[in-house]
Length: 171
Image (cartoon, rainbow, N blue to C red; front, side):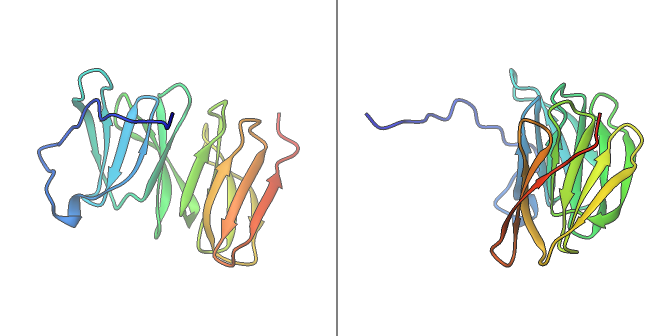
């Protein structure tokens, strides 16, 4: 038997339309968060489908959540990454060093890794916003993922490379 799927809920915010300005670029769950090119990061209630917060700041490209659902890290191609408190909607830290292409939060929620077209992968401390390490690739970073061990980063570059980075020296 083939797997099947079913749409259990569709939510259309007041701003939804067929206009590309409202295209959804990324989603994350713990609770649900979406980012779109209308310069908004939205926090959604999974039960009701209601939008709880709308954070409007700058062009969002991607989002990753801490496992406890308290914070999100957003990125944009040409702006610094930002760490958000999802309860208050406040920006806690601006992670300066590059405009990220992708970001992933460690399973303990203490750190994040980001990759960019500037050919770097950066490790961030989410408590204080400090850049802990920089790895330089031979080509722009297109995507990355962080393994459940919180130490292994898989990076994909525009040159077709898949790199496996292992982070050492963290407690």
